Length: 121
Image 1 (cartoon, rainbow, N blue to C red):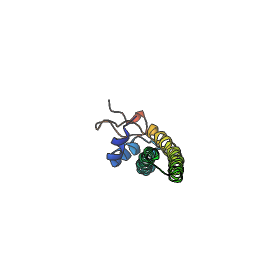
Image 2: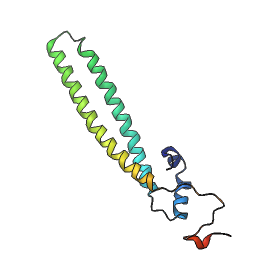
Image 3: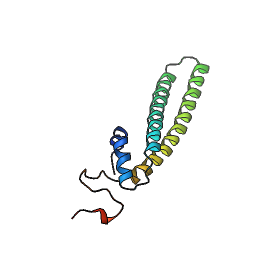
Image 4: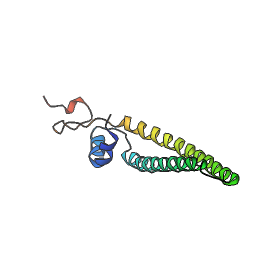
């Protein structure tokens, strides 16, 4: 299986290789999923960071109402993070499925053909 980063950085080369090898891999869909995956991962990381900051601030709150408000904010952030994590897992699973359909890169000297009749002897 090709590396995710290699496919994104060399999308045209990989797409051409898929066409030459008659592979149905959808490179354009994979590129879109990768953008969504990166954005979702950044959102999950940010939500975790914010939830941790709120969690640390709960002990520093002097007022009981302020403490409860911070606890509620922490719960809301954790719930939002859980939803974003589930969406991230769905995107990653679909992206991995497409990655598994991409064939390895063929050698530049390999003949292009649909069957073994194109092989050189």
